[in-house]
Length: 365
Ligand SMILES: [Zn+2]
Image (tube, rainbow, N blue to C red; front, side, top):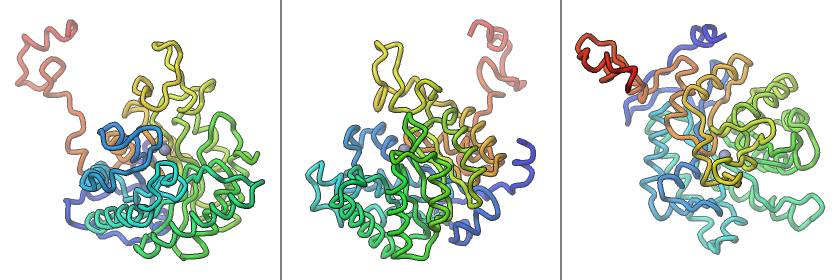
């Protein structure tokens, strides 16, 4: 299967910074030719770099250090992302209300869109708008439904004004909320819509559907790409992805978190660390569970062989994970110039120039 994935895809051309890859901006056309890689997980990486607070997870960094956001977009493109996704995750009315910054709603959305658009146009990557979980959706509360509608409508509006190539609606736990996000996208734009659920410990959406059923409904309502992102690592997302792939005809998306989730703790929020009294590891104690590059490489191979073409890594992803994903598809992004080569290593190298005094010692190193 690995050989098929490798031989049937042309490696993406390595684009020097500042020069577009010359690809068209149609997501569906790109998917019809092969995989599209979308780096997500911006808030976790910015948190690790010291520019975003874990907990609320609102990207105030858009105002405080816009250059850091721009650089992270560039780092992900350098590592192989085909998409520059605007960092409007949690830049919605409800989240800004929680942190007391509702007045910054419009300029913060515009800042995220402007930065992402600039990177996308410079690098020839697709420019994606982003909608996410509102955290207030309650099917039994008409007031909340109205507010969710307002949140989606206004964020779609700003993204349409900015000229996004397509929309992502992500990390959704309710099928009802996902359908509302899709409806807002369809009401205000004609660009493609990628809609993905984030599954918690339960293998059902919050409104009781299997992910396969929920994705079927989205496909029926006009979503172009459906699938899963966030919450689950490769091992516990894969079984659900197989069900979704069988259930729908449209393209499928898979963007796991890069953590070693297990059957008894299938979401990264449920992982506990035995080293620390079995305390919840989420969100800032997840380091011992981080997937290796090889694990992400293997996930990319397996997902692509299943026919899943919209691929990425969500919260916890670093550029090295995106590079591993790109390489799993036989690609050679600019960052691959620096992919590991142990032949010149001081102890484990095979190069003739390495002294035997070192290589003879490798079993003791
Ligand atoms: Zn995520």
